[in-house]
Length: 356
Image (cartoon, rainbow, N blue to C red; front, top):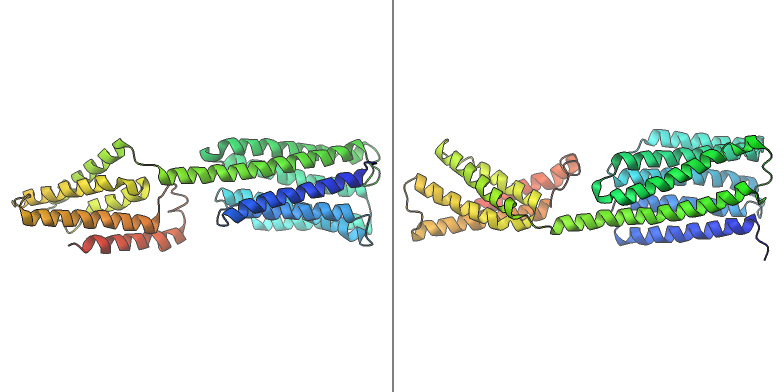
């Protein structure tokens, strides 16, 4: 079988479709995870672009397919960039992305319908792909976290290679004749092979990065507090209780309750034994302060009831609010504060007050 540029274009289209299915499978497993949906849509756009490019010589709509493929290539790279920004909880600048896509599309249309020039179209789309590749590199480098550091550096290398290749490709029309689109030249073969390699590698990289963050989140949720965390929780709770009772002569304002909520939010539900111990010792200190026997039957019942109420309130509040592992991902978002944090504070107050 004779291998020509059409075969390369077909293989490129099929490979892009397989990459799309891999990202779709990753997305379908957890639709609420940020980034993966945008990467899937970006890859879908690239796949359709490759398909239009493959069909351009087999259809009476060849010129239209040329423009559409250029638009889809730029759109695909922009969607991947948006996915990177969303993955790291950053907001992209939609205005310049839309403007950039429109400009590249208009240039492609001009050099297709008005002045049909393959050389300028190559320069146009190469600059667009290289630009978006370097923007993706910049976003990953600036916003990467420790949990995804290895996959982030892998993706940085892949997109640097992609950006550098298309930067070089943009200058090739100035070096001589470029022939027809499906003429098997060295640059055409290099383009097919490079895009096949880079798109496959960044698909793998994005899946790895998503899985790395998922594993880190699961690890954080299951991580138990260290012994020093338990000791510190007991000591700080008791100190706050003693300061409130001894210096301010009041239990109406109870700072230790804030410690309980904070301990559950930061350290997780497994901190409950320390909260129970701290509450028990705090109530004993209270009875001693008011000259009542702390270990008589009635006061022990009061103490244990308070322990149950205080600890249960922390557990319930934790179930509502969840564990806080990043200030930016929690208190930096007003919806989280209103819908989860304030609700958990209210529930904590109600549940802890019931035994009283």
